[in-house]
Amino acid sequence: MSRAGEQTFIYDHPPVIRAHASIVGPKEGRGPLADWFDTILEDDILGQKSWELAEMEMVRRCAKDAMNRSRLSDEDVQAMLGGDLNNQIIASSFAARTLGVPFIGLYGACSTFVQALVTASALISGGFLENALCVASSHFCTAERQFRFPLELGTQRPPQASRTATACGAALLTADCDEYGLRITSGTIGRVIDLNITDANHMGAAMAPAVFDTIAAHLSDTGRTAEDYDLIATGDLGWIGRELLLALAEAAEVSLPPDRLIDCGASLYAQRQDTHAGGSGCGCVAAVSCGWLMKRIEAGDLNRLLLVGSGAMLSPTSSQQGQSVPGIAYAACIERSGA
Amino acid sequence: MSRQPFTPAEYHELVSRLTPPSRMLRGYWRAFWVGGLICCLGQALTLWAQGLNLGEVTAPMFTTGCLILLGTTLTGFGVYDQIGKYAGAGSAIPVTGFANSVAAPAIEFQREGAVMGVGARLFTLAGPVLAYGIASSVVVGVIYWLVRGWVM
Image 1 (cartoon, each protein chain N blue to C red):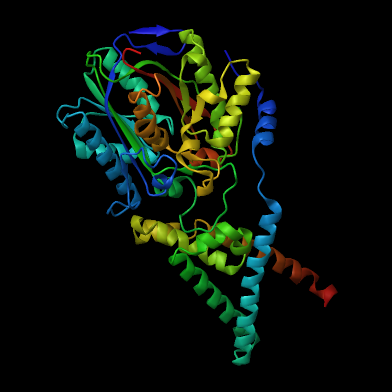
Image 2 (image 1 turned 180 degrees about the horizontal axis):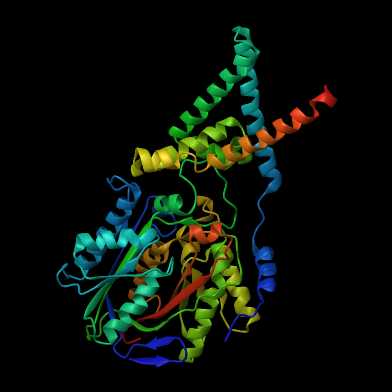
């Protein structure tokens, strides 16, 4: 295991993404990426008694799907790393209870999936685990009632607000050494950055400086430029946050070509779906990367991807007490073996 | 070491430049006509109630009751949030909006039980309106009591 620069892990034994699975809700299933997702739910409730149990069931199904695709059973999986947006990450821990897999709960808000990839890769590369399941989920209805208002309340949302995606993504990482599939070769841990944005609706603005900081750290630590990546995919800055990131990079004279930069939140929905700034939530970057981006690498369309998950580290309490919204971002470099 | 090219103040300027504004005029128009329509409906109900000889005190109460029933029913059928998304303050300010703000948490928190769910959360949104509405009515009442000698 080696470190590069200030914040980056270079994995000496880069883990393989042996299988991945994605589940999205009905609205996400009518978006531009509909054809890529493995499962599109017919409804949001999944036959459960509450939205929280529905999200838990979504995590369980997605985790099971990834295990089945990798031909590993519950007993074979050595650790599950994941989280969600619910208080005390109950969707992930309750799903882990059902699966019976050793569990490390993580919270990085919407960056949780990439946080899990970076952490699990370090544990596998370091020889502590032979495999690990990385999972993250979000559900529109659980997030609304926790962070905003009851669903049936007649309110208007500002143009900068994003929609919490009903989505889940799971990736099963293994320490196999054969030359197969996708590998995670490096990972960068972000710092919590706060430029004093107090509008809790404007998460793209709150997170863009953190995303910029992590991308700049990754490029500087690895001695690479953005041109070394076929694509840089940010988590859920949304349409406005992506523009802010480009403006930050330009002002700091860090080359970030717009044609190599996409945002998962801005890709998940079409503008006509009335989701304002785009999608957000832990499940957004998880489902878009597992459902779409990883398949594009497997298809040979991309060779090297920098996946940057971003999170807004706010809570309803901090917002009500007038605190600003700090952001964080994690980056994972995903490459095709032999590329 | 900070990699940020902007100070918070410069960044705020950039954010406000790149964030599209709310469409205010369209919002005003929608709030005006939907809010006005709800008020007209209320006035029509009052006139009708007066025609039934309900009296000047009872007729407005009858109207309020009908509008609360309407707001609650439309919330239950999942229609009022759509109206609210379209009309904003136009549907939030009338008493139908108040009914919506009580009915919405009642539906949302029923899974947490009758006491700590519905009971405790029923007035999470309407509570501030009640608290400050009643408090300000007391203040206005005291002022009226003090000055009524001059104005009457």
